[in-house]
Amino acid sequence: MGPARTTEAHRLHPNAQGIGPGLTIGLVGKTPIYQGWRECSAHVWGTGRGKTTSQVIRHATEAPGAFVMTSNKVDGVAEVMAARTTTGSTVWLFDPQRIWRDSARPAMIFNLLATVTDTRTAGEVASIFETASAGAAASGKGDPQFDSQGRDYLSWCLLAAAKSGKTLSDVLGWVSSANFLEPAEDLEQAGHTGPASALQGMGRQPEDTRGSVAASAQRMSSALVHDELLTWTTPTPGVPVFDPHRFVTSKDTLILLTQDAAGSGAAFVSTLVYAVVTAAQHAARRAGGRLPVPLVADLDEVGNVVKLKQLPEWYSYFGSMGIVVSAYFQTKGQGVDMLQRTGWDTLWSAAAVKVYGGGSDDAEFLESLRKLIGTYDAKVRSTSTSRAWRPGRCRPSSATSCRSPSSPSCRPGTPG
Image 1 (cartoon, rainbow, N blue to C red):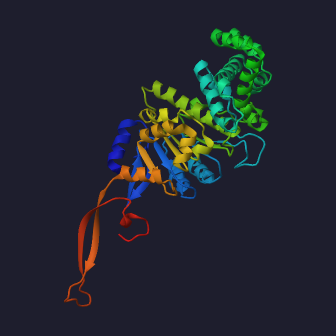
Image 2: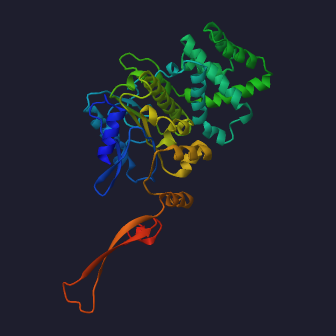
Image 3: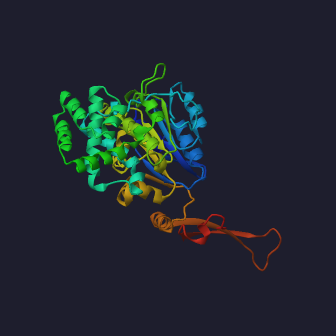
């Protein structure tokens, strides 16, 4: 398998120096099994099963170009930093909640508004913030009737700030005060007459409706309340600014840490991942459809850290562009909670590589794996004796039998 994967790697990326056969996902005996450079993977690993050591750290050492890692804890951070620093490249760390480093001064600056370039990207970033704040809606604070308009309101405020040189603090100010007029004026001056007209129309709605729309947008933008997060988006003398477009064609490393799955930290981390993969798509198109050197993104703790509804869609074509994503869920249920059932089914089906690391007691999921694996031929060795047995005269024999992963002889710890 290794030689074939190596040949494929050189065919797909002829100018990538030192590129290996792929990302190692396991061993069969002593033979490595690889995730190729045109494949995305979906993982289900229970807690404490060793995914960070066996997958994420290893992939960091095998990535030939830029590498992205997400997590909600310090596990693997030191090892990834050590492995990637040896390449002479930069390690970027986004850690506003001080999971790894205890300092109020940011280690990098991410200009989130630079990601907002048009109405489409404004809508996608607003949707990321909406998804990240979904915990509030689930607890009864959301108002689905006005969520669509609230998302549009937040979208146009983000676009207005991006086009007029304003900041995320200005976005928060507009939304918090239900100010429709000022961002509409900024959009009109920037030539975005459509969104400007939409905001003006929202401002002319009945007071109760305006209030409900603003309330929805306020919930979605709740991450902007946290000054410690905005600090990492505000230019600071002496602090380097992260450029997604330069990153995706480099050998740099981006480590994204947050422990807030319900909103603030996840909104910023998710937008950073979105900015990187968007830049990677642009770079791939400029290069003829595929990145010259693969981008590797290991989204560890994805269900807790990265709130991106686009993941299932991305899995259908990222591999063909040289964007190699591995998404790690603790359980299938976590994936369903994040993506809904249809989204999870799409992601799992689109993943060229599916890895189950153990630790699940979901009978339905385990049964689906059993059916997916099917039966296989196993060579069984046995020893027998005859009536004329004498010490040291055992007769070995072997036979091939058809087995299923659910048979007793295939269960861990059971003799076969």
